[in-house]
Length: 401
Image (cartoon, rainbow, N blue to C red; front, top):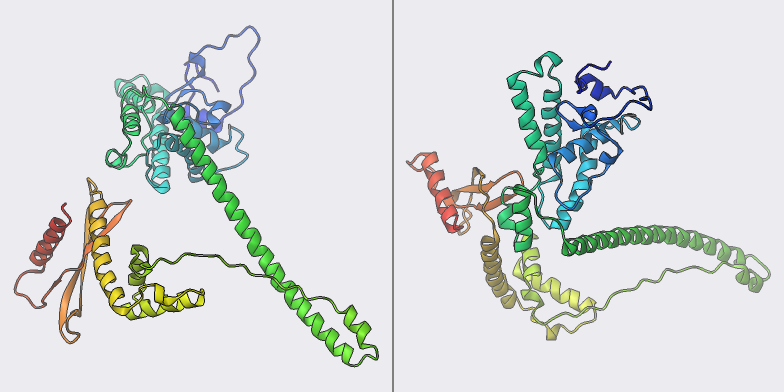
């Protein structure tokens, strides 16, 4: 199955046919371990991604090929998507150390599978065509691609990263890859690991408490039924004292609460104002609900501002501040798609008057931003395209884009 060339064919690489052991006198050279279009031979060390930098395309390719065939044994029989997700979990650790944002998991796995397909096309070139100029050029381009950092950060990563040290690491990974993770990055990764561990333990404790609550409720029902049976039996028993002593004691589960401080301006807090707006609560409903909550908690309603007028003013003032903050914090993507749709709806001032409402959205595959819903009178002589264009331009200008 071996050819005289130092490279192994594509079919042999995929099947991972076991080779006969070399004799003690036969030497293993570096060239004998090379695979056409892939570089060095896949070994057990490729199961992990190591180093103090972001992973290269060659590391990702070797790791996904190792897990795709389980080191050549094919015991796990993983799909390409499962192998890509397994490799992604190993890459995320390095991005957390460098504090560099990443694209979505779906897009990251798709990029890994595309890298695998591009490499398969190179390795599928027949032996008689591997020495041609075009093939040599393709192999050279693939080698340059494998030597570079495998990009999993978004296009606007330079804008999202605020720390200059993290930004310098990203620029180095785009170029000569001379930067490495230092002690600060290791400490950050350790903090993230501890935080993740605390979250997992908290989830386990929550599940355990829920399980114990279910068991306690079932036990309480059983004890209640047994107590009722014992009471009915004691009525017909000549010795009520001995029957009552034999009755099982009911186990009641105690419930604990929490102490909370309610500030006087609770009705004006942005989080509660935003929540009440999303739930479509009127100022009167929000005020009444807040008063009932304070009373049930044992507080004094007179010490908290919960009047209708205060609620209405806070809804107007805080709503404007939230809207302004959203516009200031929005990072405009370099490339985006514009979406819009119109519908006839009653006007805000008069329900009997119908007007056209145009919903305008803009965004990319990672984020979608709702710009607004401007209105315009129906039945206009202007073309619909001109009206949509003017309203969209006005919204973009108001967002300073």
